[in-house]
Image 1 (cartoon, rainbow, N blue to C red):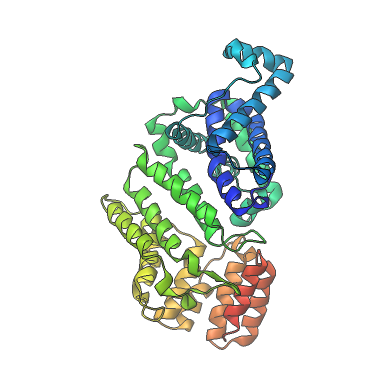
Image 2: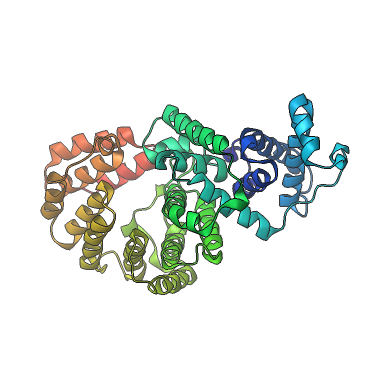
Amino acid sequence: MSHSQAPEGLAHLFRHEYGSLVASLVRQFGIQRIDLIEDSVQDSMAQALTIWSMSTRPENPSGWLYQVTYKYILSALRKDKRQHTILYENFDSSFNESNRQVYAPLVGQMSDALLRMFFIACHESISQESQLVFTLKSLCGFSVKEISARLFISEANVYKRFNRAKKSLVKQNFVLDEITQVQAEKRMPAVYKVLYLMLTEGYLSSHPDLTIRLDLCLEAERLARILCEHPWGNKPETYALLALIHFNLARIATRENKAGLVLLADQQRDLWDKQKIAQALSYLALSAQGDSISRYHIEASIAAEHCLAESFQKTRWQNIVAAYELLESVAPSPMHRLNRALAVAENDTPEAGLKILEDADIPSWLQRSYHWYAVLADLQYRTNDTAAAVQNVNKAIELAPSQYVKDLLNQRMSRY
């Protein structure tokens, strides 16, 4: 079952519950049964979609999903003679009762299982690419297509990376409760990256029918908050990531109207969520307690500049340029170079911004992305190189992942 096929309320619930269900059941049945667990979670959600659309939703949807999924797994194990023997070696005979009441774990237990599963999925024996794909798919409910678009890889490669991670996890037979704080510390950067990707996918979706996916942004906020409340994740970098998430959530309601996506310069700043901006600022202050600076600190400071500016024209672009320069030194990325070029164009001249791109060593993967051609075209229009700009904007539109992004590109370039 695809989350996107469910009504909005149920889609949000399913996204919210998916990872916790998988993690809690992995804790119960073992990582070696991850395929059966995922299939059973999806079956229970498909059943919920049918039953809840025809009757009242249960008082405890999480408990209902856990019970149904649990019984799906037991039923599948009983059908396999070998698994049937294992079942009775590890569980008492009362599991033979088909009407046995199954009690879902407490909320805190499910949150703990989910975090531990995050850290296991980010084991250093698994490549970072496979860590990301496995976590996004199995714990965050991303589709293969969404992962493909966000990571700039083919769907075939998504499947390959997912299967590599899964085979490694099953082979090593990890146990959730055996992970230590030292191990978690080593894997924290990978966990942060997954949460960051959830935020970016929600803020500008690769889904063909959805411009913004608020459920993903809210899920990123929820998971980051859970991480922050856990002893392993209560640290400045987590607060910086939470600040970044809240700055983005504060503006998200104004990023779209009936005509499609709305450019930053055109957003109604008086409608930005002041409470979320205040929350973001408090998290940003907490993030300053440490001695180190991360990419999330810097990106949150950039978002703060935008949120606190009275208007697009009154933005303190010099601060944003300086922040992107620092960001490139802390976490080098061609995407940061693109953003710095745009900030320089606002602060200095379009020619200065264009020179940054001309001097850049652009990797092949970025040249397959609409981002590169869109920024290039934008700056070429501003420097009156119209012929080159038209060629590049057409390329950007051709590579854009959805009609919404194509419309936004047309809207932006129509100004020149």
